[in-house]
Amino acid sequence: MPEKIKAVFLDRDGVLNQEMGDYVCRMEDFHVLDNFDALKELQDRGYMLLVATNQGGLAKGWYDEAELSKMHAHLKQVYHDKGVEITDFFYCPHHPNFTGDCDCRKPKPGLLLQGIEKYNIDPSKSYFIGDRERDVEAGTAAGVKGILINSDQPISTILDLID
Image 1 (cartoon, rainbow, N blue to C red):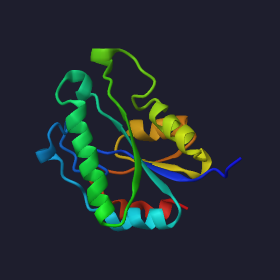
Image 2: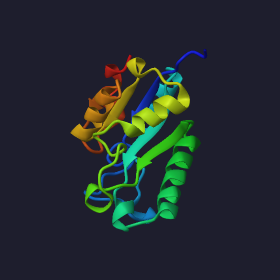
Image 3: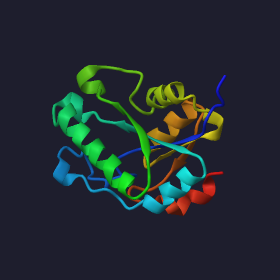
Image 4: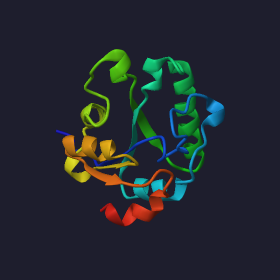
């Protein structure tokens, strides 16, 4: 059996890109935050970097999968250019008022469980950095240690919380 790996899951809005107060619906409103050095350090410590994000704006019809895909490709490329590899994106396209209940919308752990399963991740050695209480709740439910930051807070300020 292959050895389990450790990972840092990252919320997207307010953690990797600037918080807009509501959904980021257009590429031109998508501003990547400078967490390059901090994420490079985590990567150098052996952590796989994964994104777990609620994207209820899809269910509301405010943007489509193509626009979301562009935003994620842009985010991945900007970080790649700085030597940081974001391995994968897990997103919930649902919204309870439009699509009913689901297992993937945070604070439920579905997105993290998908990543844990897909990449053979050891939850007990992994973290979830998010700017909402629901991120920490999702992490806890998936057996991952949640770290709550303020929106747009530099990740470098919490590196000491990660082994």
